Image (cartoon, one colour):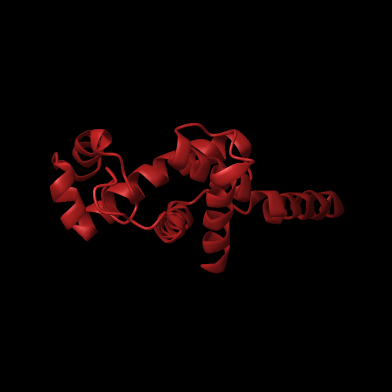
Length: 150
């Protein structure tokens, strides 16, 4: 009886520490991963050019800013307000990244793939199809910055 309990406990522990479960399920770990991905997206963003139509260091399209800020900050911001308030932009992007990372984790159950999918989504609005050209280069930069932050 004791041997079977020990064996069962060993199997459970092995299952929990298996590498495919590296994206943590607890909120603190998810928060840290979302923070790392938020920063990686900022670092990988194309350098902002005057009048390029994007806002903040994360290069966010103006049309989504009012709804994202309302959802994440509880108040709607204009693109110009968002662009000049680094902390509000960071909080908003982090909120959206956390949502998308959680969704992707539930789908793929693999940290690197979840991060890759969210980076692709951030650039294109789709979770897949960023495996060639400029989008692939962008996703690879995001992954590089994300891993460097570990």
